[in-house]
Amino acid sequence: MRLLDSLSALISRLLKVLLCVVALIAFGTAGYCIIEGWTISDSFYMTLITISTVGYGETNELTYVGRQFTCVLIPACLITMTGWTAVLTSFMVESELNGYFSNRRTK
Image (cartoon, rainbow, N blue to C red; front, top):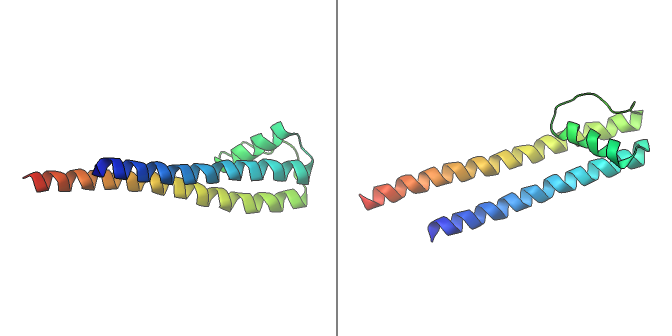
């Protein structure tokens, strides 16, 4: 029962973070479309390389406003991905601790 509770809590947290990632991708794509006038494909690609911090380079030349938008998008991406990593790490640590304490109670 305890495992099911922790698993459902993990799924709930993962879904929330996944929703944030999807919203961030939509925000970035729409932002580049509106600000730079790029196609959805170019905007989506630029958003993905910004989110992943790969940094292959800009698909097209950015205007000043586009650079400012990217400066807002980068920290938002880092914060969101840090949240994703924290959720996964906390699940692994909680699972290990639950297993440890379960074994200890059994003994």
